Length: 193
Image (tube, rainbow, N blue to C red):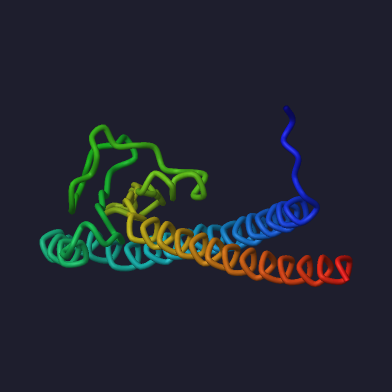
């Protein structure tokens, strides 16, 4: 026997479906804007970090002050690894021979990320740029930029947005149901009179 729904139930279901669809679209739009901003922010921070490291490292290396540079890099890396930010720094020759390392660089050294947007979701962005070494030798400066803190914040924000939309859906659905029930009772009273 097919399920027969009253007009009131059908209208309620239609309204709830429309509200759920609207809620989904709003949350989806919010997420795409927020996630795009996160990727742009990581890209800017990585580029700024690379410039700053290069400005600190190149003069120290040319002056032969590796010990001071190592101390500066160790201080930059000191702190809580779980919050994100700079994870490792490796300065090497063009042939890949390390000159100076701070932090735990992955072995073998990964290739630099060309797509920051994809690397953000892995939790660690690998960036590389040229650096001037003593004797006018061109080497490379590679560093890892952790995005774990941003990923956690993104997940929390998405979860809060979804919960807010679900709460709004329940409240609006309840209001639609109450209004529909009130209207149908009035119509039943008019038809009974």
